Length: 491
Ligand SMILES: Cc1ncc(COP(=O)(O)O)c(C=O)c1O
Image: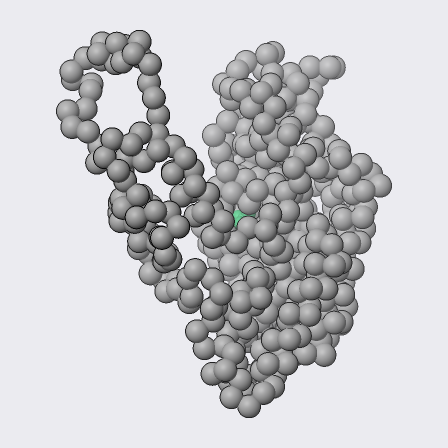
């Protein structure tokens, strides 16, 4: 069978069908074979691996085709709200692949990696300036690990004061990682109902604090409805008056960059999601970066190793008695720091102040354009993302999931769906500051077209059943896909 004859969906044995006995994707010189002969019997394979036999070009074409079947940020817009997929500018990769950085070893003595430590110090300085915190640790590998660090700091701080407070207040609009992180750190999670405006209810917070066992509040600002917590300063004061701390989930910091600083509002701890604000790869909760900023009174609790500067020299200090200790191997993911640093330096002070403005402007463009077509449960100006619902489309039997799948027919990745949980049938859209107005406009036109389809008699059967129809795969069984992973060519 030739590559052209292979039809989709691709079954694993189709790779085998490309195999032709004797075809090779490599050639090894005779001298290398001689070296292979010297491998002791105990270490060499007895049988050949049952791999398909293909030429290099056949394999390159096969995997290039596979890669093109995937939706990618290089191919189109990702309007995902909250867990945003943002364009990672190519310049980040230029510095990320520079051999002088790429070949650094994490166990190198500090004296030999002064340049890298200086870059970390400088990145921390930029993040401090942007957020208004006293110090920032770059160690956490993801936003969720940043939450873990922040909550461990709250725990250690309370312990240092002899306090047994054990409750963390978390609004019902929060990202799932918030209550999960609090629970993992042994806190009792108290869910706060959002008020009619979709915001924190300061009276409810005061009431909880008066009970005397609240250690902290985890607030996402702007929240997951894309709304700015306008009472944040008053809420911080209430918490501090009751000897409790305020943790900000700063995943949505891109809406505030250059506009306002959480540290100035009274927030005590905050994580950044480098992938959402500073254009690094997400890392799927793994090899990313979720830097954490803290106010002055929490600096001594930061995780080790702590980066220190004396005169012009830098060192990593692991001897910090109040620290929560190490939370990640070495000092985190340097390559992510490098990418964030490149992005911030490329933009400069002037460019940085445009991040927040563009993010907010584009989201409000979408809000205004699409509120004619879709229900907007919280109808007021938003920050970086906007949440619609399927309320109007439900009348004709079309649900959020149908809309998401139909978008794929038009070549757009769907927005985040069914989150935040407090909006039934949520359609959460974040255009991101890295998209152009032209692309966002195209997306809005397609959304309008889909909304129009839903107004027709029998529209569900006519347009939505079986979508996506234009892709190699139609609706997949997402549970099976997640639980029955096929990770090798012959599994
Ligand atoms: C609001 C919010 N909080 C926390 C997280 C968790 O971050 P991460 O996926 O980097 O662990 C996300 C995901 O991007 C998020 O959107």
